[in-house]
Length: 151
Image (tube, rainbow, N blue to C red; front, top):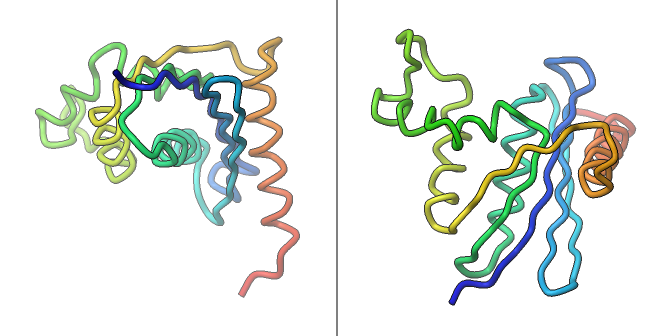
């Protein structure tokens, strides 16, 4: 039987594109793990996807995951079947344009297929304490990245 894990994720960007950050909070049997990171020139959507990828990648075995995100872009891609269509169409949308961020979508899809993932949309910047914590982690990662001297 797979272990049940709850994951909350969020991505943020200072400028879009600009310096981006991601945050994730994982829950398993009362244990909480927080993760975050940042990148230079990126977009908010790439950070939303990265948060999900990093969180799922942290799982050491196949799990049953409920993944909560305020990103309709990410959640709807799975719940509305867009990602299956994109894959079937060679990573092209219904209007035949290229899917943005195919590298991250392919990585996320592989992880979602490995685990049993249920994607749940939550309202952003609202009263969801775990989503708010992910946002704070992402924003803190942006600040830390921006404070470092860049080569």
